[in-house]
Image (cartoon, rainbow, N blue to C red; front, side, top):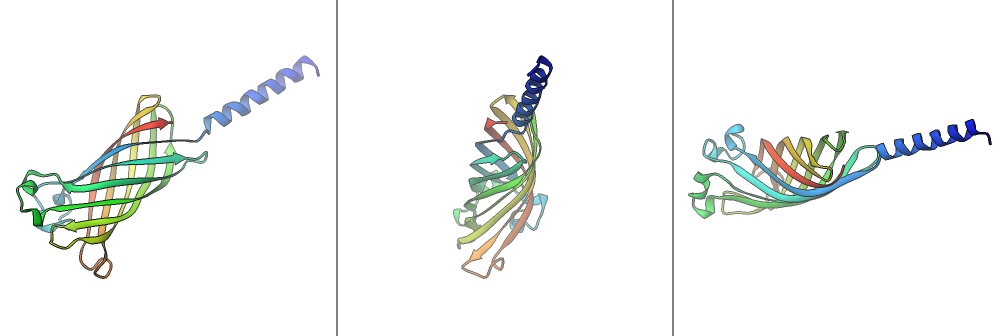
Length: 192
């Protein structure tokens, strides 16, 4: 093999390796916090509109394949975050916990910035301020922009729309069905 063919082969191998590295899979895990205010959408906890906010805190993990498809899981708790809720009687406070899956698509990614369109879909227990607790569903499609703080840590901000409703003991969605826009923040450790 002459020198020209060797150089051509080396360039082809280098180009293929670079293309493979640029399409490498990634993923991570971390902490999430989000917040929604009932007055952003009075249909979400109408009795509490104008009086505070509902917070969520949890953890998650996910993987991103070579084509940018995101799969993972999450767990979170939902709680009264406003001062007026804290002063309310315990029987009227909102609270619950949910767990489920994350699915979505990485629209753009790299070590400095990534943009994801995804959804958290899950089930759990929720008490909407009444004395009864319900087995409930949770769905939140969201758009997240992640900014690299280091090559292995990102800070993200996301905007989404949450849907929470009962599954049991009453007919699905008959006891309550709340929906509201949300604003969230994530801190992720992983590979980008």
